[in-house]
Length: 261
Image 1 (cartoon, one colour):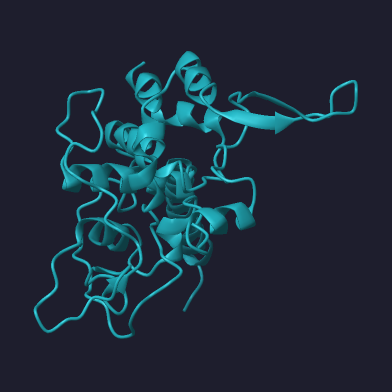
Image 2: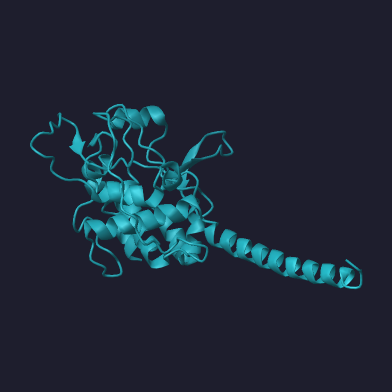
């Protein structure tokens, strides 16, 4: 599978990936942020569903651009079958990562290839290792980032696509980057997405906007993998309540129809 082969190239992009911190723990200024534009997401509304093709591409962006810094601790590889991946494809994706398991019969821990029941393997063993590799900052786990920010998917999409050159009256200190969607406009995160940063297995052109759109769709799914089932259940409950209300109203009219009011 194309995603599996592309993972082999991830190590070569470590320098770029290390800068891909979705939410920096260090801001270089204070002030208001520009409001993100409202996007027309496929998952919005009571009948909204996951755009699986986009989310599958978003997984590829995550694995090739984000996974060397950001964890996804709340999601297991086997959950990817919900996005349309086959069991064999999920096994192949998981097998690219190693986990510490054990103890074995000798009481020692050992390394093995990840299996579908494992959670996504974190890039760092602990927070201290993450800080040592990222100038003292711990890259946030991406499992719930869509829910963690005001504006949700719109904000993350705007942030990923909002890097630009500052106006002449804005001083950008060393180590900072200008992004008007970040509070204060100065953010420690370098621009993580660049044109053709990945080679999509389905032939889609990998523009910055497209990669941002896809990875946000994937992150939305990761934050609420039960969304579609929840919406279906909610619709059934509302329909049941409407029918029940109609029955109770009809019964009430029948019971009181022969009484003199």
